[in-house]
Each structure stands twice: as C-alpha cells, then as structure tokens.
Image (cartoon, rainbow, N blue to C red; front, side, top):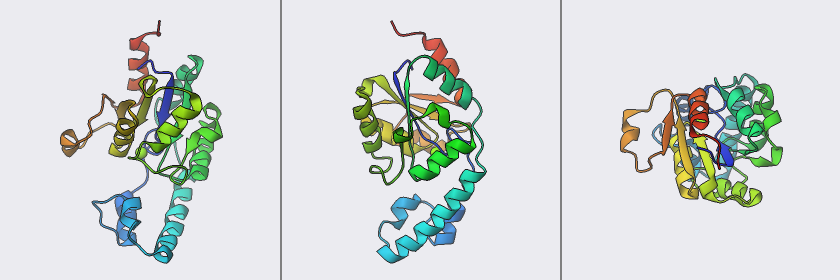
Length: 203
Ligand SMILES: [Mg+2]
C-alpha cells in the first residue's frame, strides 16, 4: 500500500457511480451479461460507429454531472504530498475522462498525458494501459497499485502484475468466486487512505 505509482479507474472509483450500463446495453440490443466494448466487437464497422456515437453522447452527459467519490480529494492529496505518481486507465475515452476530472475538481492531481482511455491502449482487463504508464514513469509493477470498482480493474492490475485494490461498498457474491481475486478491498476511498496511512512511510 506504500507504492510509488498509483493508477486509478475513473467512473465509479474517483466518481460516484452513475452509468446505468445495463440500460445502455438494452437500448443498443446488446446482451446484458457482456461488457459493452466486447459486445460490440462482432458488429459491422458501420453499426459499431453508430453505436459508439450514442455511447459517447451518453458518456459526455454523465461527465457533465459527475460527482467526486467520497474521500477522493483527501487520498489524492496524501499521495501527491508523499511524491507518488498518479494516473488513470479508463474504458471511457480520454477526452471525456479529462472533462470528468475537471467537473469533479480532480484534474489538478493528474498530468493529462497520464489519463489513458479505451483508444490509447488495449482496454482493461488488458494490462496494456497500466504497463504503458509504468514504462513512462520508470516504475516496476511491484511498486504500483491499481485501484478500481470493477473486475476489469482487478483483471488489468493482475495482468500488469501490480497490487490490486477493489473499492466498492458491496461486493457482488458471485465475484468472490471470480478467477481474478484482489489483494485488498475497501468500501470507499477513505478506507484506502486509512490503509495507506496505517502501512507507514517506506524506509
Ligand atoms: Mg469503474
């Protein structure tokens, strides 16, 4: 928990979760039990482009009304004061992610080039985005943490070999049997900060 490199998911992790992914999948005619990006993969390029136009409009709408997750300011402050490097890897688009950060007042903790969206690298659960940030920063996976509210985040963290922190109030029962487990679970970012403080300063 005293890692020098901290990579966050955005929606539902640094923001209060607001996207109704199931409703969007239903409106697109996608199966509800499959993530949107994967569900669209077999579609024709024209149909996919039309779907993505709708998805992006929906994502911009959510960005405009985003709220910061409880504890986000305090955690990012503490990490920055400690000299940690901070990044974001999201399945949203990078420009929408950046606008979300502006809306919730968290952009000052991040370098814009360290906010990677779904077109910047293979999307989570692939570990590509995380590896790209670590390469850029010159940090080893052993010195990094991935913080997120979803199994994609845990999976990406595992794929990149970093410590994984699941942050969500309630963990769905089925997740406990998931192939990818997480290293730490906290109900919110206050819990992450408390654990980080309890871990003490590195020698
Ligand atoms: Mg999320």
